[in-house]
Image 1 (cartoon, rainbow, N blue to C red):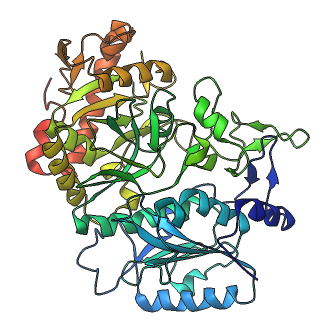
Image 2 (tube, rainbow, N blue to C red; image 1 turned 180 degrees about the vertical axis):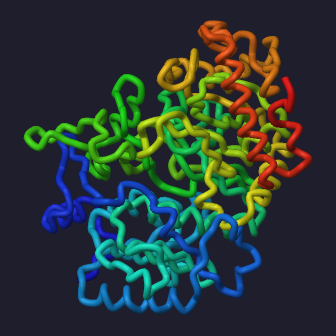
Image 3 (tube, rainbow, N blue to C red; image 1 turned 120 degrees about the vertical axis):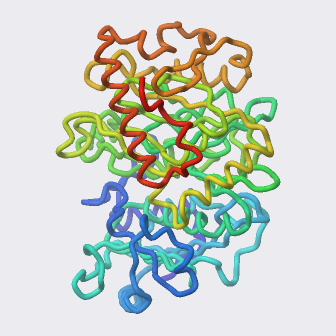
Length: 510
């Protein structure tokens, strides 16, 4: 049977009947995704067709041939024949001038709920159901590849055919693969129209000023943008057009680990009927989620529509940004909690996309490890990073946005010694930046990273603002800071940072 643009309530009923998951005490639908509790980057491929071959950043993307794609496509269609299928036709992109019509065909009812919450329905942007979609996705978790025959790296695969506008996803139940594959396609198509796609959250202040929050997973994009003092435009994927910014999605996909009603009340209250929870541990008797548990994965997730966030902007469009926040979670504890960036520094840190992995989060990691992801989203970039950086440069120059680097990581020592900066304090610093309260304060220059640090910030102790002052062991601070600076310089030398921007990074000798 085919279920087309079926209501969420009906899909929940079907998912329960098919034993795909269970309801929590708040009405959210909980699923477990098996061995895949996150994206599988080694299983993602771009089809190497002649039409797009010269465009692609192949250093960052794996190739698969058109013939291999066609064989898997045929096999998948045969696998799906005769099965119940759940189909949603909607849009990616809240601005109808630049939206992409998308049809998603799911083997699982719960994944179709996910898709409906993350994409935009036709009526949301006053568009008809597309007779011929511009992008088609087949998602069949139960269908697996045979690597030595099909040319994949494992039984799982995500194949993106940019020329034919078809995506095949098999062998994984993790719904984030659907979301990020659509984003990858938008990252290919939008720059060709002079539009900057961005891995960022966005909100607007009561007076209509838009702020962007760039950052990798775990840096606080969703938490900081979902603030009751502001209207949320979106938590993860946006685009910057000549008219302003627009959300690529219609919902949020938030990390749940450590979620609390005190620190993140908007997200906490959003996890109700219609929400999909992935891999959250619950008590089977009372069905109460335990958001502190990492038993299954640190990457527990919740997918919910924008309508679950009070006073959100929907469909998500906003004015040209006045403030841009680049987020990092520095586990070395040496970057300042907030620093003002020059346009050149903004491009440098945008191209680096720095954050850090923590000890214990992955097998074999015993101390903090720096990770760099160009444009804060390298796995989703089909084109070279400089394409997106040049677009950002033009937007910043045209609209005179102020840019800040915000560290949501550690202070007073590295991970295991210092403490993580409280999100409430970070919110106060972000609020001050947006309101212009940091415009007139004096700044001091960090001697190693060459960053401009405000000497004061409303409601923030002065010793929190200067990293070296929060460390008891000053020599350990200098050693750690020089080590991280050397990693920045090494990454810049690898070639992702144009030579004319290398001066915007840390000083060579201090």
